[in-house]
Length: 527
RNA sequence: GGCCCUAUCGUCUAAUGGUUAGGACACCAGGUUUUCAACCUGAUAACCGGGGUUCGACUCCCCGUAGGGCCGCCA
Image (cartoon, rainbow, N blue to C red; front, side, top):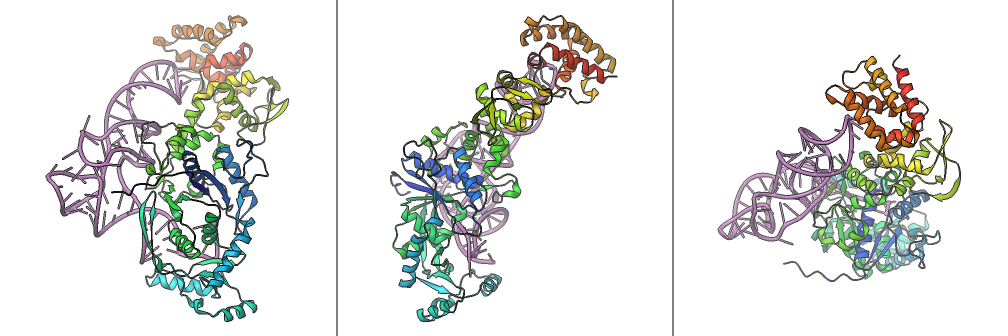
C-alpha cells in the first residue's frame, strides 16, 4: 500500500532557469507545472534566475526568459506588483543568484570552518585524466579525495601562494533514499559520488550548493524539475543534511524528447518559446499543449485553458516516462484556438504579420502594442504599398476571417492572402485550366463570367448574390453540370492560387471593378 | 564504462487484477465543396520478451531487452 499522501498546503515552488540560452520549451513546461501546482494548492510560484556562472550568463537571455513567461501568462508571485498582480513593472524583477552572493559566502565559510568542505588544489588536467582512467576500467568517475587530508595550515599556505583552488564538499559515503512524488522511491549510493565541488571560491558558489541554500532561504517546499536533475538530488540532500537544512519534497518530471527520442534540443528544430510566439502560436495553445506533455486530466477532454488546468492539476497524474514533442498535435490545438477567436481579436493578432510581410502599412498610429510580433503598431487605416490604396480594418477583418479556419499558425497568413493586396497576380496560365480545359475553353469561361458579372448592379454586389447567380450559371455551362468549368477559372483569376477561399467571398471583398480587372488580366495571360 | 530512470496504437495518453484494451493527433477511405481548409462518418493501428504470483494479469514481483538521463572548476 502507498503511504497516505500528506496534505499539500500553500506549497512554495520555483522555476530556476539559468540565463545561458533562450527560454526553452522544456523550461517553460517545468515552469507551467510548478505554476499549476502552486495555484492548485494555494501556494507561491517563485522565479529565480541562476546566474552564478558569469561567463555564460547573459542579460539578453534573462530578458528572453522573462518575456516568454509573461507571454505565456505564467506569472511569478514574488517580484510582481503587489497592488495589481496582473501588472508588471520593471522594478519587480525575479530573484537573481548573482545578487545573493553574500548569503552563499556565509554558508561556504561556515562549511570550510566546520570542515564539511575543504580546498582542493588538483589541476583540471589531472582530474580529467583521472576521470578518463576510472571510466576506462569500469569505475564510477569520482574525485579521489587527494586534497581532503590537507591540513588547514597547508591549504592556507597554498592559497597565499596563489595556487588555483576550488572548494569541495566532504560528501558522506552513505546511501541516500528519497520518495519522489512522481517516480516513487529512489535510492542512490553516496559512496559513488565522491567529494563534489560546491564553489569556485567563497564568492562563487556552484549550482548544487546555491540551489540548496536558496531553496532553504526561499522556503521552497516542493522541488518540481526535469528528471535530468535526478542525479543531482542525492548531492543536494547530502548537502542539506550537512548544513542541517530541511529537505523539500521532490518531484522529477519526465523529459520532453525530440522525434529521435533524445532530449529535446536545438537540433530537433525550434525549442525557443519565443520562436513559437513569432511563428504565430497562441499562448493558450502552447499552455494547453505543454500541459498534456507528461500529464493528463484522466478525461477524454483535450482542450484545457489555464483555469481548468489549475483546478485539475495533480502530480499523481504526471507521467513517469518521457514524451515526444509532436508538432502536429500543437498545430491542431493552435488551429483550434485560432478558430475560436472573434474576427476582431484575430485581426489584431494578424495585423503585425501582414505588416511585416509588407502587405499593409499602418497610416494612423495609435500606439497600442499588439501581441504577436513585438513592437508593431496598429493603425486605424492601412496603406497597401503595392496598389497605393487604403484599406480599413473592417475589410482587413473580412479578409482574415476568410482564412480563419485554414490557419495552423498566424505566420501562414500573409502568403495565403497576399493576392488581396496586389496589383497584378503572378501565376502560370495553366493554373486557370479545370480538368482538360484548353485555352479557348478558359477564355470562353472568363467571357461568360464577365458577361454575368457586368450585369450585376453595384447594390447587389454581395457574396450571397454572387454565389447564387454564378453557381446557377456554372451548373448550366459545365458538362454534366460540373461547376468547376466556370468556378475554377474564376477562383484562380481572382486569387492566383490553386487553393483559396471561395471565389464569391473573395469577389465580394475585391469589389466589382477589381473582380472584372482580374478576369481581364487572366484573359491577358492566355495570349 | 558506472549509476539512475522508463516501457500500451506512428505520436500524446486512458486502464490501478476480470474491458470487444478507450480517447485525441497524424494517416487512410467516404460525405460535403469549383479548390483548399473546416465539419461529419468510417477504417487501420498498441499491452517489449521470458519467467513467476494468482482462479484470472496491460496492471504485482523477478530476469532479460530496448530507449533515455547523468557522470564539469555548466545549470
